Structure formats: C-alpha cells, structure tokens
Length: 226
Image 1: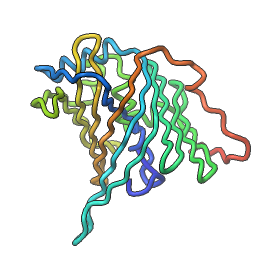
Image 2: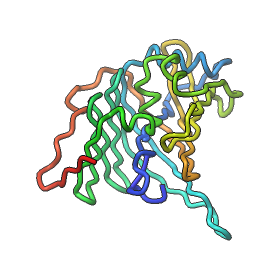
Image 3: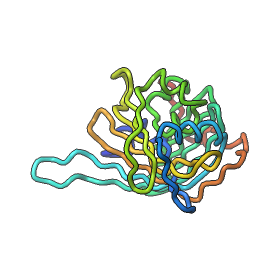
Image 4: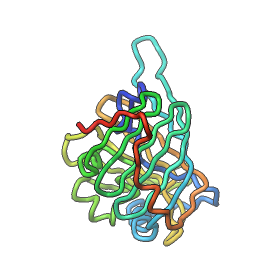
C-alpha cells in the first residue's frame, strides 16, 4: 500500500499520511508570513478532526500521462502525539497512533501491522504537522522557509535535513490568523517521485475521545510486528 502507485506499496506516505491538510469551510485569509502562520497553527490548534481528499500522482511512464489516485476519508488528532487517519474509499485503511504504538489496519488483507510510533513519524507528513509542538520542534528535522502566497493561502516549505525516510519535500498551505489559523493543504514529494496533495474540509477544533487513538485488531486479522 502507501503514506501511490498502490495503497499497499507505500503506506507510510498515506499517513499522511498523514498528513494532514485542511480545506476549511470559511473565508480564506492569506498571511504575509507562512512561517508565522505555521507557528500560529502549531500553538493554538491542540486537537481537531476533519474530512479529507487526497490525490497522489505517480511519475508518468514514457508516452503516458501521469497516473492519479484519489482517496477520501477522515482524520483526528490530539497533541502532542495522538493521531488517527481513516481511508474510506477506494480502499479501507486505518492508521492510528496513541503516542507509543502505531497501528496500520488493512481491511482487504485482513492484517494489522504494529510498529513503534517514533519509527514511522519521520515518514508521516500529515502527522508531523498535526502533532508537532511548535516551529522549533520541526526546525530540528527540517529546513523551513516561507513561500509566496498562492491560492489565497500562506505557504511554508519544509525540507528534511537528512535523506533518511521516504519524505523529500513538504509544503503547507495555511489560512486564517492567530487562534483561527488552520492548515488548508499539505503537498508532499516522496523518494519514489510520487507527489501527494491532501485537502481537508469540515474542520472542528475540539477535544477528541481518547478511545479513537487505540486500535484493537478485529477478530480473524493477522497481527504483524516487523
């Protein structure tokens, strides 16, 4: 799968997939500085939930147009380290973290893969943005710069300081100001040349039930611990 040529081939990119972008149902207000907008979001949005549409574009083969896969689902987060991303269509996938463990449930394969959360966080763009404590925490792992406003949004670009993991570049589009700042778009490039754009709607900045950040494997599912 992914975090997409196929959902099972690169499942870390999906967490993304987290990642983890918000297209809000409210007037868009661009900010002069994408870095300040990102800091405002990290400081004020402690929890929330939203629906999302993700479009992943695979590199074009010679003589062919790029292949685009569209997925839809919903996500939730509770800082500092709880995250849930559920793909509803076209493939049922569930990605959950309680801050210690990370579960990936593949309904078609009837499998649940369990890993340590810290081992996958670096490859989870949406989760990185939604669970980071502040801009300083991100600057330890990324070179961050402001980009020119576009699409009525303020933009920040994050480039990993190392080539480890699948993430190569992350762009964050934000709207609003102060405590009303929200992430509207996450765009990321992986090491396979795939680009992904995540847009979210219906965002609600409210405390989330702790139970949704724990996954109990369904009866009959195989549990893998790589």
